[in-house]
Length: 374
Image 1 (cartoon, rainbow, N blue to C red):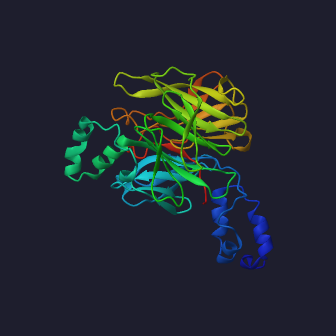
Image 2: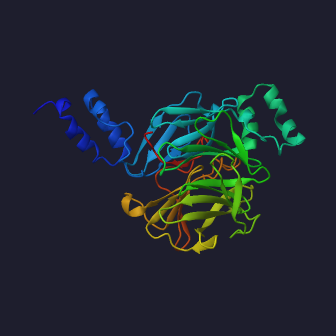
Image 3: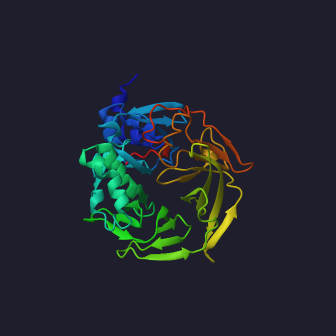
C-alpha cells in the first residue's frame, strides 16, 4: 500500500469535494499536513448543514442529530458571557463587562464589535426604576448582574449574511427601542426604528426585513442611511397575545412563524402551538400556510432556518423544531425546558429524544446552531 500522505493534489481536492458534512471535512483535513494544505479552509461546496443543538453547561456542548454524538468546545470564563443569539454558525455574545463579539466555535474565529455602551439611543427607554434595580449590584462589581443590566437593554443579537454577495454581513442588535447595526469597516453602531421594539430581522433576497413585536413589517436601507420603510402595517396575529415571532427565509418565501404560549401556576410559559404565514409581494400582506411540505424549520434564537427534510437524515417535513425562546424560567428551569418538535399537520408536540429536558445549568439556554467553517 502506498503512503496516503503523497496522494496527488488533484486527487485530494477531488475527494474533498465529495464530502458533505462539516465534521467529516474537518477530519479529512486533519489527516496530515499535505491534505490540509491541498484543501480549502473555506469549503463553499458543502451543503447547508443540519443544525447542532447547543446544550446548557460550563462548556459549549453541541449535539449532532445526524451523528447522535456531542462535541465539547471549552470556552474561557464559562457563564461570565451572556448569549444573545446564533446565526450561521456564529454566536453573538456579551460580556464579561460591556464587550460584544461574534464567536464561531467551529472555525475558532472571533470578531470584536463596538461595546454595548457605544450603541446610540440605548438608554431611550430606561427609567429611574431600571437604574436603581441594578445600581447596587453594579456598585459591588457583580459581573453577572452587570451583564443582566445590559441584557435588559439589549435582549437579542444576530448576524445577517447575504449569500448572494460574497463577504457581506451585518450585525443586528435588538434594543428596548429600535435596532442597532454594525457592518465590517464601520467605526460605530448605527441606529434605526427608534420608537419601536423589534422582534426579528432577516436578510432575504438582498433586502433586510424587520418586524416589530406588534407585527409591523419593514425594510431597512442598508446603502448607508438605514432608513426604514413599512411594507405591511397589519398583523396576522393579535398584539398582546402570548406569542414570540420569527422571520424565516425559505427557498420559496419569506415566512412569519408565530409561536403561542400558555402559562402554568408559577407564571412560567410553555409552547402550545405555532402558526405560519408567507409574505405576498405583489400586494404586500400575509397568507396563512397550513403545510410546509418537505420543509423543516429550526427556530434559532438568532437566525432560524428552513431546510428540505428529504436531504436530512432522521428528520420529517412539515415540522418545526424549537427550543427555549429566551432564558429558562427561573422557577421552572429544573422541571423541564421548553424544547420539542411541533407537527404542523395535527398540531402535536413531541419531546426531542436527543437530550434530557432537565439540566442543572440553564446557561446558555438550549438553541439550534447551524455549524459553519468560516
